[in-house]
Length: 415
Image: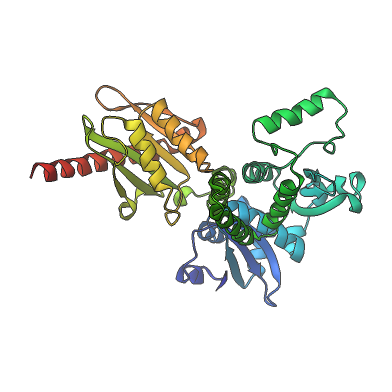
């Protein structure tokens, strides 16, 4: 859905600009599109164009564009990944003046799907499109995507949902044993389709084309129909696999894109969830989820869980139950980072639950000493160095909240 607002700074503050990801458009006096951009947070990105040092941070060209624009429109997307794709499609369609001036499209990346028995999905430079591939060899083409680093991160996310071939030569035409070995290895670790099931693979390619065309909801509708059909036939394992793919599409985890989106980046939108288990020698075991939004506790989103699957002291099993129950709530926004209290065992069990659900979220664990004070943080060094304060605050809040909940349960038991 698209929205618009007049161009003055005062108008921007009157209009509530959403913090969701999306694509924004600067329009001229004749409603012509001057510039198209993507945003991790529409609110932060749009407002950044009205900073006093815009010229220094961006360029004379962007300052000139803002001076000519009379209004801004935007379209919200479900994820940063979809904003990146929509931006490329719209720039290609509309060719806005300030997106194309002084731009060397030949150096940009394009995504092509080859016209072969088993189509390959390849990243090709604009300058190589015409020289290395004829029109008859390309089934679909998307792009250009200006940021090579960002696009590479995007493809890693896409490939976790849609398994596709990205080999240099057509499948079956590998001349060396090494080339064939690479394909076999990728199949074994799940990066390529495991079987040469042509019908299934072509459907994957179809869904990939639909995804890059902005038709995600159509894919989900098709998959939901198939899942229900399989369930009726009691083919529950196959239905479960499709359910995981649907979940992955509905909750695209693009934290790598958020971290790569460095221009005017503002982490105030980041959601962190922390989990903790509390009990007294296994008695009245409870779990909690606390949430930080922009580094601040969002107490209205805290959740309590009475542990049902564990009757004795087993923190990892209880944590597994809490995470599984949490993931049954698609109406709760997924976080960009999860924090757990404990060590490798707790971190591993959370990562396993996420992996089995088809969800990619970084996990940080807070290791405590004998005095129950933070001693070490486990997880991505990038996240730990950047969000150490948020990790510790979230862990502290989760521990406080779980103890409070457990004591309340104990008091009720005694009375």
